[in-house]
Length: 155
Image (cartoon, rainbow, N blue to C red; front, side, top):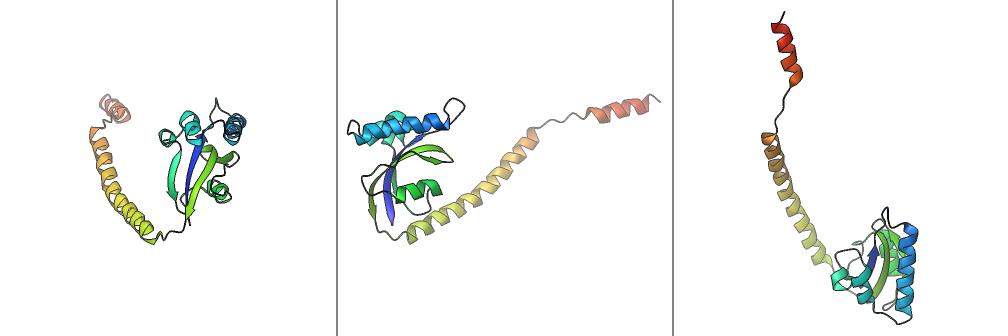
């Protein structure tokens, strides 16, 4: 079963505590539930992730594609419902489920796994090349060896 959802993410930091993030999302949720605002507009205004310009649109999600707290909250919603503020390792979210569908994701998962394997095959040689370039550019001045040679020559 796939779920099409959108979310609003507020990240916690030294200036935004867990409680402040949760409260802000609760205020946004109240505005959404009262009909005073549209979810996509609130996502554009408040969300702190790359989906904000698209109104928080996450697209079709397969089981296991999101972190467990997010997935559990999303799965508990009916289409059209908005979650209470949910905490994940990324911060605090409001989630809106747009729709659900039965979809055989076997081909999609195989394609994604193949893409991951190809990326890993290319990433390791690229990393090693980069490391080699860093080593070639490094300059090491071993002053202890120089100091020992000077002391030996002075004896």
